[in-house]
Length: 479
Ligand code: HEM
Image (cartoon, rainbow, N blue to C red; front, top):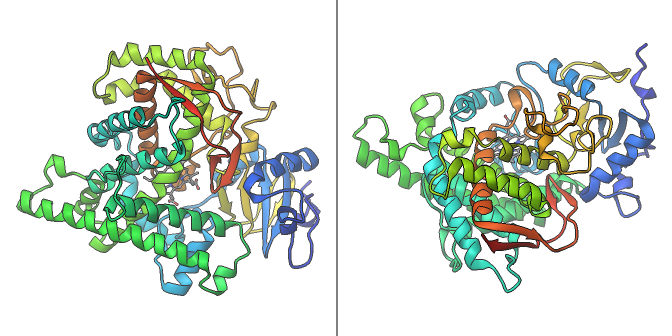
């Protein structure tokens, strides 16, 4: 029997505020630690519940079968809500909606122009030589940055510089120079770091705030806009330099191999205008930084907390790569335990609060209820990934569970539980690049240092992406 939507369980809905007060200072929960609310709600309501935030109904799912049903029902143009601050920017100042915020045919046109370039299996390996060099420089930077406790002060921000530097080689074929101990305030790299931080902070703080910024250009809105414009200005400088070099070296023929960048490939595809290509490149650059940094931080943390797993990984690195040098695509293919370590870290510290979201294009039966068209569906993989029902020893770090050799002696993880990059035609377009950056950083770090951990355990903080809730006090001892 299918029940009507209004019978679906969920927290009390107040007039005007809906369920929002639960996350305010009058409530039990906070948006920063939304995962704790989700765990409570799961215990109280089971596999499905609904809540209303502002005018919007949100249906929360915990069952992988229901999540699969949503993905299977999505059509040609899967619909995900845009970031609210981006929508406000579009309304106030005509800020263009990017790939992550567009819907329908407009989204599809942009997406098809880059899916082939970015999603084919070997898409990222073209950038391996440049990204190897960035990872080497990061290790050197860490070596020189250690304090007397062998820790890296402000480690999270240094990781952000690595991810920015690494994706910079893809987007602009240029070294930005962020991995410097002496970053000058008037340098392009410094401005890029500051701009990206201001913009991301604006995104995070407005996503869960009362939407005054939809009505007025609030202080936070101005900060976001300043950050975005700063990044765009600097990106434009790099892009112009690349195009200038291309003009001089290539006499109108295909780009010289050393000048192949994401941007040049996009331009040569003939599918987008020069202006669109510039926009897409800047969008990808900004989408890549915090997302990859937060995933990399938890991967480092989990390995530093589990020395026996780290040693196993070290052995794999020695066996596959030997004593150093550039990591090749063939070697990456053989790094099975490394990939298992990263997957397990994604499971324990799922990178996106809740998980992927969709707006239903048609009404759908979920968990025994008829959910109307237009409802926002939150697929709470973050909670599901820690449930005993689906994972043996859910709170333990066991990379072996992802190995196909059966070494874990645990039940294999079920389908539709682990989707850190989303699913279907709208899944993360930068996945291969994020993974490559994380592989390289971990291989070089674990190859050079024994990572140790002395501080208290790290929890998760929801800042659009899941971030460590306290400083990462990892120790770096040379091998
Ligand atoms: C570990 C790092 C990353 C994680 C965990 C992550 C996760 C995600 C997720 C969950 C989505 C939504 C997918 C869906 O709705 O099904 C997404 C979308 C997206 N990601 Fe990532 N991402 C990461 C890194 C990157 C990188 C490196 C880039 C760029 C090079 C990038 C660019 C994008 C873009 C442009 C979208 C929107 C795609 C669309 O709507 O068509 N991401 N990401």
